[in-house]
Image (spheres, rainbow, N blue to C red):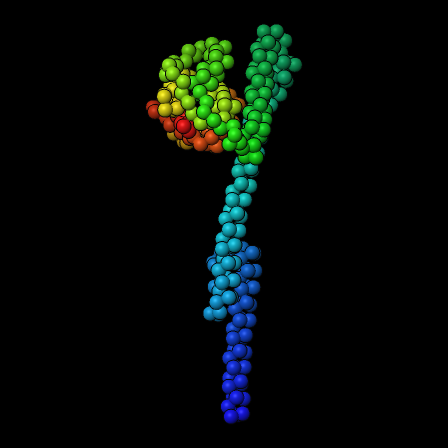
Amino acid sequence: MQLIVIIALSILLILALIKIRYLRKGYDELTENIKDQVSGKTGVPVTLSTSDPKARRCAEALNRELKILNEEKVRFEGGNQTVKDAVTGISHDLRTPLTAIKSYLEMIEEEPDEELRKEYLARIKNRTDALSDLTEELFKYTTSSDRSDAVSHEDIEDQDIRRILEECLISFYASFGKKGIEPKITMPEAAVLARCSRKDANRIFENMIGNALKYSEGDLTIVLTSDAKVTFENPAPSLTPLTVSKLFDKYYTVNDAEGSTGLGFSIAKELIERNGGSIEASLTGTDLRIELNFAR
């Protein structure tokens, strides 16, 4: 009887040692897998040769966390590239008018003709205005459209966007006159209610009208419908389907001569989306069409 007990205990000990050996092998595999995953040598999920349920659960939990980590890494790398692209775009937009200003200043120093000097000064003023517009757009973007400055739910309420749009159009009256644009406006007679922040709706319309003044090479048509959809349409023969597809990209330059960075469109997109709406751009022939859909 005693011999049987000893044999049974020996068998159990051998089985335990075998299990420990497999567990050690499994955790050694787990350690190596973790090192390879962290170093970037592999993206293959962790697998273990052991069938121990606890070790397998550990591997499954690790795979889930590694997947999240890899997704964050991809987002970080993408964001880092976006920042690099933004800096490149801003540097280009700043360098272009600064180079022109420097050239005109050198020409003024050597130009005896007073009329030409005045012309050069006018061009310098034009380039200075372009720089001013750029810095203003950058300021607005970083202060008003940052994700950390997301609109509060308390700010979102029923707004009469018909009235907001009217007020914005009136404020641009002089600018329309300077460009020789007489906008064709169609609106319902009654109020048009939409769920949004009044401040954001005002910024959206300001950006849309401001960009229309920049890009329009003819008249401007604005249509507001009772279902809170607003369309801005104007001739823009210099645009192509490719440039239109990039209009909402941050810092994308559509027209270097005008010092445009695309920030106005990018800001409008972010503002309307955080208020539950949407914005789309399309090109019909040579006409640029921007469609805003406010949440109701």
